[in-house]
Length: 152
Image (tube, rainbow, N blue to C red; front, side, top):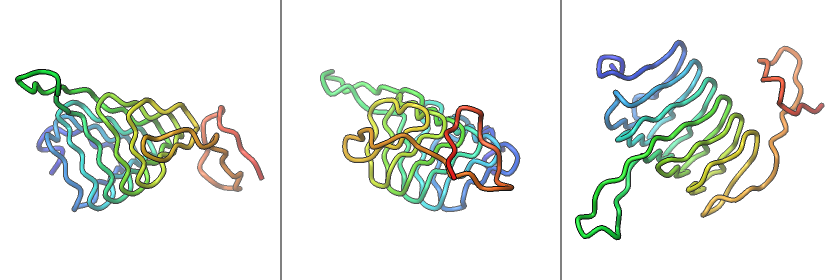
């Protein structure tokens, strides 16, 4: 259905039936990406989810705001980009114009107003750096990019 309205939804991408997508023509979901139940994608500007991205329940991806200093309260739109292997946890908020880096994790209920570097974990309101993300080495697991720190 999303494709009929202009969304780009690649192979094995999974938008759950109860996620809400405003202006689906501004949504791109790369392979194996997921928008979980009750995610809200306010796609006034483009939202791009990279490959293997998970956006968990009740997260809010918001590409629009208003200029509160303008007497006409003009709409401001900026795209959101979420890099490959990133995870946006439950009830997180991602503001207009934010880029979430490859492999980054946004903790549950975090509010992200600035870009998040690759392979980092952030949390809180406003979201702040917590630590570098390190991925456990598991035999037979899907391969991660070469720049990923693996440990046993």
